[in-house]
Image (cartoon, rainbow, N blue to C red; front, side):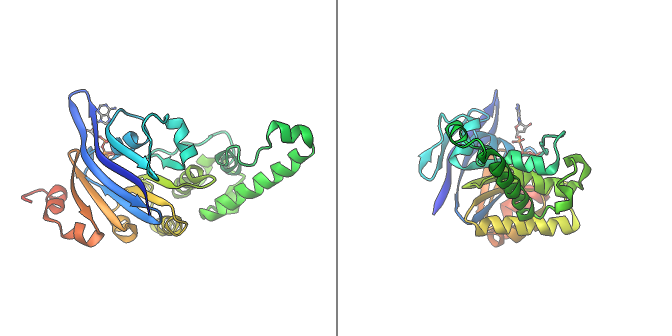
Length: 253
Ligand SMILES: Nc1ncnc2c1ncn2[C@@H]1O[C@H](COP(=O)(O)OP(=O)(O)OP(=O)(O)O)[C@@H](O)[C@H]1O
């Protein structure tokens, strides 16, 4: 079932048209790749979907328009996003960061607290347990839980970044270059995590420059060049498309 639908998306910065005519869908349990050369308009597409920049065109989530929904409210609709730069609570441990990612899900409401003040300790224990599970689900070793994010390897920081965005779950996850700076074994772990999210029915939209990862995990791919969508299809179709080859390698389409 289609969860995210983007139609005729357009983004301008003054006179510069950064994105024009982007149209794609992403179903639950599907990974859609968005690829294109530097400056092609990929992040602007994410920024437009999440309302961080003004746009023309329509974005719907499970058939419901996201027009007018403030960026900070998108999470409530199940739309989550990771960024190119890691963004953590740098003074908190990895485990506390994971707890923060759970938001209010395991915090007692005021009336519940007044009814039973002793429940606060139990709920805190449940929250810590869930935070530990979240780290484990994203292959973050338990021994990193007591360290600060900048004390763990960079590849694991990228996994933590996805775990924190995912938090209590997502309908749509927009992943902006999760593999940037990641290599070796961490890349395989990342591929497994993306696969797992697909298995959980999440609609994953992946911006990525690592073509091996894109071709390995994506079900379909949209290619954008100088703001315009030039191809849309399966990894096989995209690799054979002369317009895509020209955009990446130069020369005639
Ligand atoms: N806030 C902004 N103000 C003005 N121009 C911008 C702004 N953000 C992006 N641009 C321009 O819009 C175009 C698309 O940029 P965008 O960051 O969306 O591309 P990208 O495909 O994500 O690039 P990269 O792969 O390098 O991250 C570029 O020409 C960029 O310089």
